[in-house]
Amino acid sequence: APGPGLFDGVVEPSERMLTEAAGALMIDGERGVGALVELGADGLSELMAACGRLAGWAQWAQAVAAACLALCPEMRGLPSPRRERDEDREEDGEQDRAEQGGAVREAASPGDMMAGRWNATGEVACRLGVSRTRASQLVDRGLGLLDGRLAPIEGLHRVGLLDESKTALLVRRLEGEPARVAEAVQARVLGRAAHRTRAQLGRDVDRALTSLDSEGVSRRTRCNTAQRHVSRPRQAGTGVCEMRMLMPRSDAFLVDATLDAIAASARAAGDERTTGQLRADALVA
Image 1 (tube, one colour):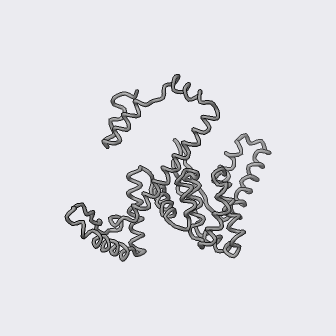
Image 2 (tube, helix red, strand yellow; image 1 turned 135 degrees about the vertical axis):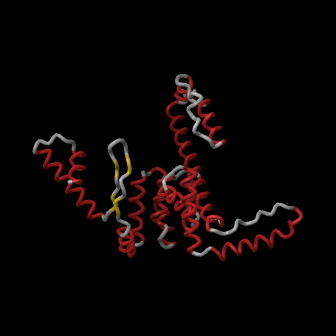
Image 3 (spheres, helix red, strand yellow; image 1 turned 180 degrees about the vertical axis):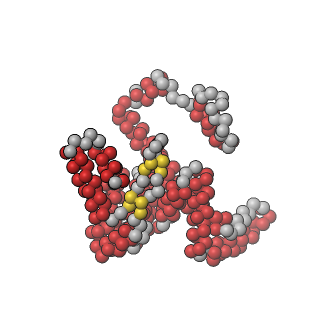
């Protein structure tokens, strides 16, 4: 078990309880692993899949909670709704709820919603210890799951057949589409989505959108192209950083082909650097 001073930096009471439990629940290197191995390949395969479904459900619950957090009056700078607990005032409950509901609907302007999303993103980032970008993606996924047009996606995510990454991809690709198109695309791709990789599912969605709504191709292209960017450097270990580029398809293939040509030329001239190293160095050059 971990030493007594290993988790001294954990001050949150509930988290301290979890860290103490973590030390007591470490897998026995011989008996524990041996017991799992005795389940056999089929049993372990099903156990692994069940764990994936459980993780998918937890990701669904987390996203919905984050979205509801963005909708809370407190996040939009409004007073917290009263929670009537006094039995003597039970008869006034319906009227109070109607007044509160009307106030929330009246205040739900685009500006209020944007403020709620911004504040909720900060709260999620602090509470989960993630970046604002990651927190924003979580809130957006949750808001997409609350969209009735994407109910089939929400259902599959809730039962764990879609994980976080696949759900986020589907929500992002379909959230701006007309209801009839979103419904038709879901009917076409969701049947086998659970057993497709994220990249394969993305291609399935793109093909379905093109087939079902060919007139919207140019609109989607303009919208996606407008989001082109190069990310800021993010540390990926001592002395190295990683960056991400999002660019139009033709430009991406041009850059890729150019880097390949430079790397191949250098290798033919006897350069001993790997192809990956040559491509990276050529990009900087």
